[in-house]
Image (tube, rainbow, N blue to C red; front, side, top):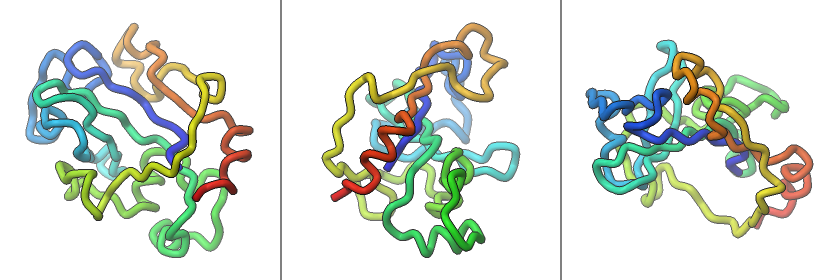
Length: 166
């Protein structure tokens, strides 16, 4: 279950890789039709998984910051070189990509296929169930760093719903 995300508003967001319509080999996939993966390497070690979300040539994306694992836990444990699930097991964009086996070579693939996909398990949340705040690690973006574009399910909501997945 995706429990935390950050939004990036393309050309008008100084924290976005596509700020001011910047186009590079790395971020070109942000200009694709929504529904594809944008995966980039951060600090040379962390593969960060984003979902391109808008129409072609509008470079909006959502960084997936944290997931609560449900299926495939054994392979995730192997990928993370762990024996048990801990609270921080996939709570961070680098660790979740490692747990899910997501790497930069998959950037640009459709999320409508069977390789990487987002599944709707019919869980519905209200605005009061979600904390919002500024994004993490984008201080260089000035006032845009303060935008309330980070969304995280509240801990009590996560606990209430973790056992109710279909």
